[in-house]
Length: 299
Image 1 (cartoon, rainbow, N blue to C red):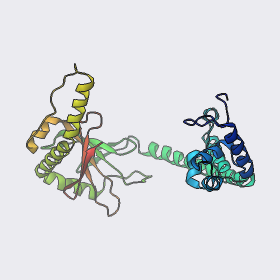
Image 2 (image 1 turned 180 degrees about the horizontal axis):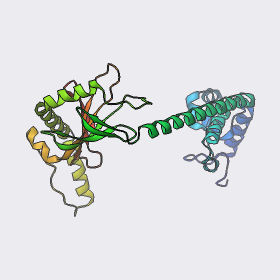
Image 3 (image 1 turned 90 degrees about the vertical axis):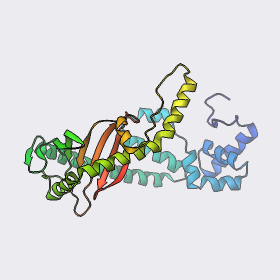
Image 4 (image 1 turned 180 degrees about the vertical axis):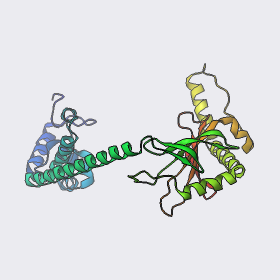
């Protein structure tokens, strides 16, 4: 048979004439697509009772629904049409009637229209919100001069021993539609952090040290693998800091400081984002809550 044989399944030999006759008879009896029926008969080793159980199994249907990817490419500019096509294929393979498919399609179209309407309303509100807050400024008694960049208040701040002129972001509450100025809780959280900045710096030092020690074996393995693939490749050995203070040689530059949103009674987080030598693409972050590092990892 040609490559266009409708019963062709990748990874399976072409069907014999006897197999072809069994598949077509099974497809006619069950009303399911022939290629799908062949997949069930192959898995059932020709046992039609077991194949019938398989074609009624939701997991088997999901795994073996056949899609025309060329047709899907033609629908690429219409996501709703792709969703409708995928649903139709799955329901056809599951043995649903045309009436059931039509009902499900109509429901999908209604849901898609409702979602589109909601999405447009959200985009409209977001445009209005951004226009309202963009470029607004405030001279905050704790954070200093801040400017709103549509998403949060931005500025710079001195925080020895972490550094001077650090990039500062003060985040508004989640889902805030109006202009919300930094709250007293955010100010107090930062003031407590600043009052114990030396201790927090040592906590950051320890957290980065432990983070690096955890990823160091992986870095060594990656270096060894690279040396095997490219013998001429040469790079300095992975650093081996022995005490927390040594880690600053692997931490580049000053951190970005983020004061988290004031969401009711939730603790307000102070997050420090760093560039680090062991992950130059992503950097790292340390999240403080109530004076403790509660999260550390890649950005």
